[in-house]
Image (cartoon, rainbow, N blue to C red; front, side, top):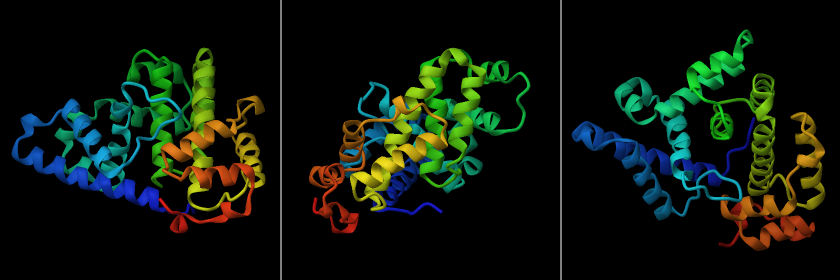
Amino acid sequence: MRKINDNLEKRKSVLMDLWSDIVSLWENTPYKVDRDSIVDMLKLKYKKENIEPIRGASEPRDLFDKELTSLYVLGKYGMGLEVQYPDLFDKVFKVEVKMDELNDLLLSDDRDGLREKIKIIGGRVDGNTIARILRMGLTKIYFGFLDEGAIKKLSSRLKEAFPENSRDVDKYMRFYIAFMIAEQIDNGKIRNKTTMDAFKVALALQLNMNKRLIPNDKYIAKIANEVFKIPTRVVKQVLLGTKAAGLRRGNKKR
């Protein structure tokens, strides 16, 4: 069972508050609700609450469009809103609905014609499509709606169906490992470099990843500091292996 931490709880709370605003807007002035308006609302909410979208070291221009995955996952699986507001989901989250459907397909035991089935649902498959499919899996895992082992199946099935996109899969899985390590630092399970390095290798082996694809410390530190808002001094303490790195989140000074 994954330990819930303050960062995750805050993110969930902020997204739930945003959903309250969206539902109110939809019930009163549905014509004002579309994908672009929801992206803008998400940007403003995150800025106000000092929350970063789920991301790696870069910040692509469509980052908040991709972050709608978090809003979708919590709304559907955490709040049951898709059943109550199917028209809203159909209007705003068409991309996420497709990615979710593709996740279900990839995680099923049906492997016949997998490549063509994915194309029928998702259209042209490129690096962006691969990233969005895996982002859906990561987000559901992070929020506790999917078992961690699912990401291995998603990545291996994508490589099997689209071998020409193997590098895109590996690139995202490198981020996945870094993100999960940063989360472990955040919740206090990783307190020193020895533990972190061991976790890196174990996760890479678990995912059948080549060791050369394991993320370096600098990449992990950037995600830990910028996405999880872990103070730089605490991240450095973990990377240097000092005793002070054992501070849990509740004792960190902002």
